[in-house]
Each structure stands twice: as structure tokens, then as C-alpha cells.
Amino acid sequence: MFLPTLPLYVRHVGGSPAAVGRVIGGFTIGLLLFRPYLAGMADRKGRKPVLLLGIAAVAIAPLGYLLTENLGLLFGVRIFHGISVAGVTLAYSALVADLAPIKVRSEVLSYMSLTTPTGMSLGPALGSTLLDQAGYGPLFLTATTLGLLSFVLALQVKEAARPQTVQADLASPTSSPHQAEPPGSNGTNPAAKGGFWHYLKSPAIRIPTLMMLLIGLAFGTLMTFTALYLKEENATITLLLPWLQLPLNGNSFGLGFGPRELVMNGGLFFSAAAMTGFVLRFAAGLMSKRMGMGLLMSLGMGTYGIAMVMLSLARSPETFLAAAIIEGAGFGLLIPMLSVLLANRSEPAQRGRIFGICLLGLDLGGAIAAPLFGQIANSLGYRPIFAIGAAMVFLALALFLTRANAGLSESLRFALGQGPDGYALPEAQSSGMGPIAQPRPAPST
Image (cartoon, rainbow, N blue to C red; front, side, top):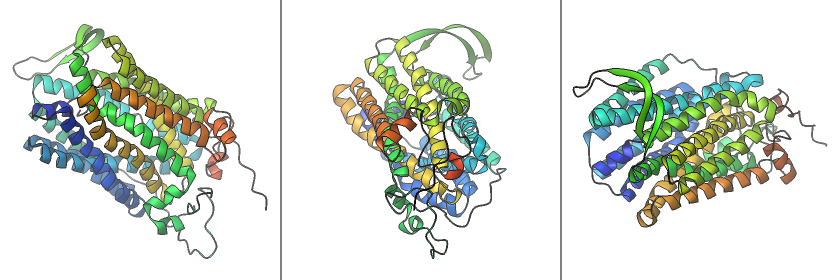
């Protein structure tokens, strides 16, 4: 609901494009501050407490937006709001990965990820409609109500029993992420002693995290500036669509289907992207069985980069809409396969931290993108920042093609769907996670 509306709210209360970048960027600062602690908490205390904490922030933060128009206070509320995604994404992903049988993990995680595009399809459209027909107050109150409903539903969640020890050693930069604990360790993992950041010593985790950092720069640009970019372009497009009129401000309730001239705004953009993402995420699990997880990740990044290029060059509403559809396809392929990749490379007792640190790369990219590209947008306009975002995505793709596995040839084979993930746990390798994934031979002694 806030993707197309909150940047407009900041402008409404007197913020410049740079101020929009700073306030929206507060969300990712909150992610950076809280994600490491919540990731460890998910492994120590369980996924459900972290999930509930994140959803509580979903319900509370919109009240903060409603109660202040001060840019400094909005920045603080936005930081607090970061707890929501910091907790929900890693707890939900780790919870589903824990419960999913290994042989159908890719399908289950793909289906799990359908919740995101479903919300992204409905949320921006609902947010834009509420803003247009009722104003900011009903928008923020509706968001709080939905957060409270989600909290009640999350209370019913049951999780798998937590393992008490971590079986993987990520202490050595050259070690496999599923190397057994050394004798005499008393069930204590060196990675756990080294803390949250110690996991970055393993290339199995460091490379996906760097990829997400680069993609986060593009993602942060897209999330922060697309609505403002489209508002500045002020274009309209005619589409054959269902329509809904809410009974607000003297209007009667209406529902129908037919050609409609729509403003090409952030709500339409993000809804179109989310609907495409829904279709791709639904199919991604089965596609990975036939094409390989690595190839789908490569296609996802390539497609996402193309969408950013299109946004930087767009001159018509049709091009903006096409870019939205392609962007949704790219993220729809990439994100569920990244979840499978991380689940395959982690033991349950460390999964919260590994999911958390990789997602933190995405958070950091978004935190950097909003204020940095806001300054560039002030001077040069919006088009150049989308071109820079495209370059970041293609750099992430190059990193994946060359460093996804231990060697260049192994990386290329995995990234092109012609070889297994050499960093995956042995049980994931032998479970048929991809059409050509085979158990690795035991190392010679």
C-alpha cells in the first residue's frame, strides 16, 4: 500500500526528492539495525516470535505516519517500520524451509513466495485508490487494521522443533558450508562464536550476499523513485480492466469490467509487476526441476536488468507498463530460487542467520540507493538513476556467472543450468533438486 503512496506523502508534507530518499531510506536503515539481532533470535528462540514481532511493527508504524508531518519524525517512524520486513521475511522464509520436505523444497518455497506478489498486486492498487478517494488518514488506518488481522492469524502458526546445535562450520573461507563440526567442539560451531558476520567468511554465503547488495541498489531505486518518476511523466494508458469504486466521500459502491483510461502511476506499475511475479513464482519450482535453479536465477537477474534499462529509456506509458511486467518476471524468478539456494546451503539451526545476512545485502543496497540516488535525481532527473541501477544488476549477474561455485567452470555450469550447486548440503544434492544435480563424490583422503 505504501510503495506508490508514501513517497507522495513525503512530498505532500513539503519534502524534496532528496528528502523522499532520506525518509524512504529510513526503512532500510531499520532493516540494517534490526536484521542481525532478529536473525539470531530466529535461530535461538524460534521463527514464530520473530514473525510476530515483525507483524506488530506492520500494525503500529502506519499510526506513526498518521500522527506526524515532521520529516525528522517520519524518518524515525520509517526506521521503526523496518522491523516489519526485517522480522517477517527471514522468519517466514526459514519457517517454510524448515517444514518443507527436501525433495519438494523448490516447489514449496516458490508457492510460499506467492504471498509477496499477491500482496503487491492488491496493496498498491488499494493504496492508490484509498488515497485518491479518501485521503491519507483512511490509508494509514486501513494499513494498521490489516496488520492487526495478520497478527491474529500469525498467532495460529506452529513451527518445527528447533535443532540445538549447528552442524555446519563456516569458519574457513575455503570450507564447504556443510562441513561437519570438528571433534571436541562440544556442539559449538565456530561460526556461532564469531557472531552473525562470521558467516561471510564462506563464499557459499558471501557471494549471494554481494549479489543481493548490488541488486538492492536497483531495488531501492525502483521502490523509492518509480512513483515520483511516473508522477512527473503524467502519462495515461487505456486498458481493459475490472474497476472498483469504494463508497467513500459520497460515492456509491461500483464494480464492473471494461476499457478504462488510467494514470500510469506507481500503483499500476507495482500491481502489474506483482501479477507477473505471481505467475512466474507459481511456476518457478517446477521450472527449476527441468531447467536448473542456477539458470532461473541467471534469467531472473538478466530480466530485471532489462527492465531497469527500459525504465531509463521509457518515453511512453506502454513502455513503462512493459518494464513493470518484465521487472515482475525477473524478481518472480530470482527471489524464490535464492530462497532455495540458501536453504540448500544451510542447516536448520543456522538458517535464520544465513537468510538474514543474505537479505541484509538487499537491505544495505536499498539503504544506500535512496539517499545517494535522491541527490543524483535532484541534479540530473530520474532517468540516469535507473540506468545506474541496471548496471548494478548486470554486475550481480556477472558475479553469479563467475563466482556462484568454487571454480569458474563450475560456476558457469551451475549458472547456466548444466551443473549442480557444489555448495549445497549433501542431502539437497541427492534429493533431485534439479535435473542434473548429483551427489558430489567424497573428497579423497
